[in-house]
Length: 438
Image (cartoon, rainbow, N blue to C red; front, side, top):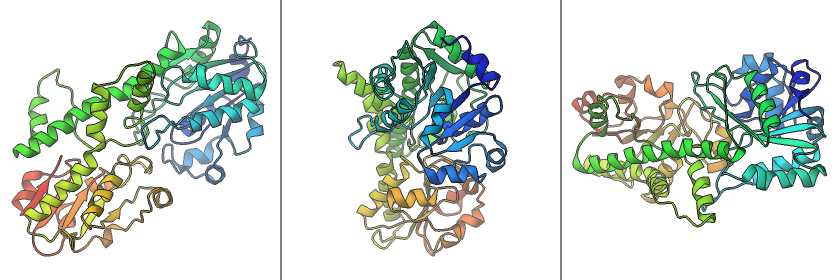
């Protein structure tokens, strides 16, 4: 059934489709379009229009690359019928109660199912718990298409490993895990991805193995960062600088170099909940993973409380304090504000009657306004402050000189919370700052 599909793709007799054109899907579509014919589909018509006009709202590949790409960008689902190899790269968030929200992947499966043709391969990239591809997505594809999986179409899974804002670890340079429902599908999926992934592929022995591998990659990082965050809380109480401790411990060859911080975004702060949800379904209550999640979810509150304590120590009136937060996205040099933990700092400060000025030159302002009701100011608006919280390590902030930082403050003591440890602690303390970092 699939023996000729790879050749048809390479000879441009068949097309590949990308369902979901966010920071994961769009770079994949662009990469494949250099080799084969690609249809790029997204429900968001405004985003499609931006791509068509040569604008990259994700900043992942840049406007010039979007202008030059041959991807057929569309919001018309009927165009999916032109493709035989489909990649689904939609987000898999969690609900407010931390249970998986499978509605995007279910919705994508419905759209794709309505437009699926015989002889197609469907590969899911969305992060899910083991079993979702076969137990949730396949029945939807079958119902909507009237086709039979394994007979009329085949499925695979290849977890995304794109790191938003990272210009070094890209689709092409990260080894790709691939899997398929049978050997024929696995071989086809592997060959197709090898067209664009220079680092090569790892053939997982089953779809469930590939799903599990993805979900533990970020769970491992989450637990390691949670340990660092817990150390930061302990060392702050002891009056010890955590960064200095980690620099000292890091001189040992086998010490793992993780750092404390706010853990947001769509992966590290989300994926562990997919794994623990599935564990609960089969009767196991996670201990280590959920403990790490609780610590990381509380770090915004910890930062806000530390800000208030620092203001009191500096002799400032908390109620009337003027506070600025530099950075709002979930990570540095990236426009994405979804699942940012900086909002936790904002909300906790509000409990003390503080409404901070928020600056983020990189963030998607419309998205932040829609999701959080937040409006951004500019760095020029940061004047007469009592405290400044540098929350995200955007290049614009890491390049700030002490002279520029001094200009942010009013009279009296200056409180600087340097979440990412961007500045020289001793230098700022010598200049009279009340300096705090994780």
